[in-house]
Length: 127
Image (cartoon, rainbow, N blue to C red; front, side, top):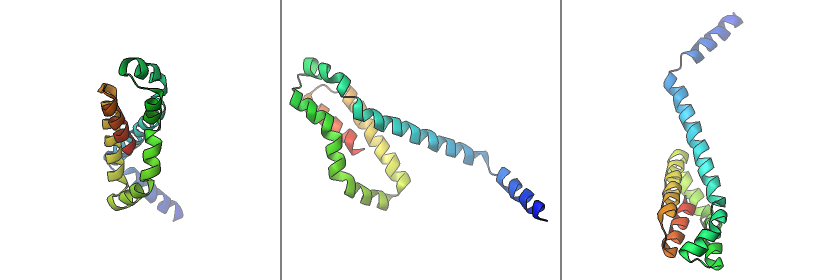
């Protein structure tokens, strides 16, 4: 009798639609890509210090600000962001944060004026 219950439980698991499995794989891929995107924003300024000095005209002080914008934003916005995540939900917050972070990163790649670069870095940090 117990073996019949186990077989029935196994049969139920196998009858799940494939879309459930594909949704899980898509969610895992999205989380992985967002993690990579978030990780790259921490260290992508250091290799470009020379370019920012020579081509854009940043001083070392401005490069320091550019590097630390993410840390400053996280320190100032952690508590309000937690409240927003609680109200909006984890999925919506994750999607919005990923979109904002990607938009800031794309803008950072194309902008060349110091004020616009700092603004793009701030937007990226908001994600």
